[in-house]
Structure formats: C-alpha cells, structure tokens
Image (cartoon, rainbow, N blue to C red; front, side):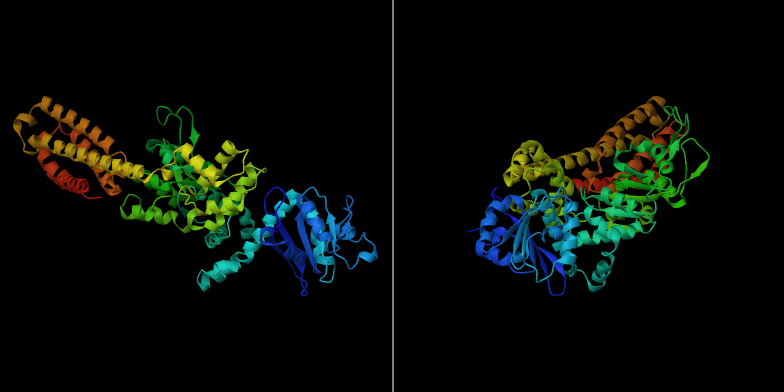
Length: 565
C-alpha cells in the first residue's frame, strides 16, 4: 500500500540524520515511492529526525504507534525545541518520539530546530517524528530541494572544461553569487555560469553587452549588475532603443535647450545627464540607425555630450549596459551596425541562454512564479514535467504569462496540462496552429516579400527611364522648366512609394541593401534640388554618382526576386 496524502497529493518527508562524523544533511523522501513497512524502517533508527506535515498525522500516527513511538505534548509558547523533547520522563529515553509543533513562521521553527539538531542531537538519541504546520513544511521542502540541487552542482559543472569548472567552483562560493540564487533562478550549468558572469560584471566598471532571445531576462540581469556594483546608489535608467523615434533620439539621450526646435518650450535634460554616476541600460540597441549609432559612439567614448541647440559641452560618468535579441555580429558584418560601436559596447559580454536550453530550471522558475500568484494549488510533479517538455519560444516571459493566465482564467482548479492546451486554443497561439496553416502563413510572407521587391525594381527602372532625357542631354527637356518640374514631381512621388515598400528591411533579408537604397534616394534628392540651376551637367552627375549604385541595387533586387528562398 502506498502512503498518500489525505488530500490526494503525494506527501514529502524531510529526513535529518546525524552521522558518526557529527554531520547532518537533509534528504527529501517521496512517500509515493515507499510502502508502509519501508517508511517505518526509514524513520525508526536512532539518530533520525523526520519532518512531516500536520495534515498527514491521521494517516501516519497509527503506523508509528505499532512500533511504540511515544507521543509528546506540543511545547508551550517560547519553549525551545530541545527543552520540549526532554519533557518526557526517563522511562521514555530509549523510545522514539513524536511531537506536534506549532510555529507561525519558517524562521521561528529554524531558530528552535537548527540549534537542537546541530548541538543537542546525537546518533544515539531516539528517533523523532515532528509534525509541523503544512505551510512551514512546504517551504522547507523547497529549501531541501534547492540544497539537493546545489549538492549536485559539482556533477553539473563536470560538463565544463577543467579550468572553467575550477573557476566556477571558486566564484560560486562568493556571498554575492550565493545571493543571486534567489534572483536569477536555476541550478543548470548555464544558470550557474550566468550568475558567475553577473558577479564578475558587477565588479568592473566597463560596458556590458547582453545577447539573448526576447524574454530571457536581460533587463533583470542588467539590474542585478547595477545593484551589486559600485554604482548601486546611482540611477538605473532603462531605454528601449526601438521605441524612440529616429528624429528624437538625440533629444531624448542628450536633452535640448529651450526653443531648440518648434516644440521645445522648456529646457529638458537628457538620459545621459540623468544617469550620471549610474547605469544606462540600452535595450534593443541593434535597432538604432547608423546616424544615431554615430552619436551614441561619440558620447560613449568621450563621456561628453551637448544638448540639442546648445554649444556647451557637458560631462557624464555613466556606465552603459546594452542588450539585443538580434545577431549583432551578423549586423556588423553586413555594415548595418557600426563595428567601432560594437567594440565599445562589448567590453564584457554575457550570452543569456534560452529557457529551452535549461529545462531542469523550469520547475524552479515555475514554482517561484506560481507561489507569488496562487497559494491554494501547488504545482504537481506531473504538471512540472509537462512544462519541461514545452519549447517556450517566449522564454521566461512566456512561462510567466501562461501561469498568470491559468490563474486568472482557471484559478479555482489545480494547474494542469489540459489548462495550458485550453489556453493555447483560446489565444489561437501560432505555435499551436496546424502545420498547414503555418505553412500558409510562411508562403504569404514569402509572396509579399517578392511582390515588394518586384514593385521596387519596377519603380527604380521607371526613375531611370524618366531621367533618360537628362542623361542624354536632350535640349528640349533641359531648357524647359516645366519638364524639369514634372521630372522632379514624378521622382519625388516614386521615391515616396519606394520608401514605403522598403520601410521594413525584413523583406530584403539584407540590411546593407536597405541602407544602400536609402543613401541612393538621399543623394538623388540633393541632385534634384540643384537640377534647375545647371541641368546640362546632370549627364556627368549621373554617371559619376549614380550609375554604379543604380546598377548594383538593380542587380541585387533582381537576384532576390528570382531567388528560390
């Protein structure tokens, strides 16, 4: 017969065994894996203390009575545990004991229990079974599980090479790293390495770049680096670079003076100024334009900046932590991200692992999230095993969202696999869509991508045809202001259409080509502004400044349109 909690859940038992070497190590036993006889053999030898939830006493006490476990009255208020266990007379000295303990908090229990088990209990003492409040027992079970994971840490670290393993074992003993266990959760090898790198990054003052998918906790890591650094008393400013309009970047970062532009009615300090002596976290830094990257590079290198509309230079001692979920090295290779800025921001690099690469951490993270939102139904082992098998493309953020939605919608029921699947159906999650529908969406995206490129090549060809009279120095066009005006109007309209088609570089799969088209349009606009002054020189201007760029853009778009991918 299996020992099952009366509420239908498996009971967990915490065993403390005093060894001859005067060491006490807690171990966690799952009662579902024991029969009645095995339980009695496990808790009855001398030198063993078993912690059980009070709700299990009705099931356990009859079994203990069969082997003469003696019942002791619960201790009175403010009576220490080791005194309470000596309330029985001497005739009970050699018999095992059971006692009910009523404590209001985990801390109060530990203040009584730990001195007793460490200083008063010996391998020759009778066995004891302590029934403690369920809430306290649950917290102790979690702590015992974490200690078990830490004990297995040496085996986990064996996956690293000897040099890195020895370094991690040394760094993991640091008090700051131990404190990070409650913030950056997990006991996998990647979680241990990440905590060690967070600690090391906090001990230096250089810039840090965090690389990882969306939802992996890059903002949390940046905050932990700041909170454990010498700048923790300064400001911690978070800026999402993808959310700042391109034309407002300089004003937001460096501030502006009064009437620097039409809407600047008051003087405003910038983020660099506010974050002085603190930390500036630039999230999605890879989304900055090349122009704004140059402005950021200048400020990051010189620690100086000027407000928009001002001629006075200000200084700011700010540490920059940047993050991106894109392949930043590929962007550097494609020249859509400045190499010098990358090296400036990447003095200390931390690669944040996705959740799918550390499935053993999922139960720890899920239990921590769930304990904050629902204390009525604990997460079952079966449900946690199901969570470990999910891929979690949104990483920790998606896991938290799923658990919060389960609580909001199905809060009166225990979390289950069926609840997650029902939630996916309600949200019409793309990840759970039928394969046929997924392939259809991909085909639509591919067709739209090729359609945009085909329209772009048609527009660029049309611009070249419209310019043909100017390129050939046709006097009927060059000397006719109305014809020149028509050409200018036509090209402006086509450039606007081209800009709309090329607005999202995704459709080009080549950020460098996108930037090349933008430069081509900009230079063409400048040439058109001077067209009325000296139209007869346009022939030379075209072949000197535009012909090669036009041919290059045309060939690349043509190749993309007719490629198989």
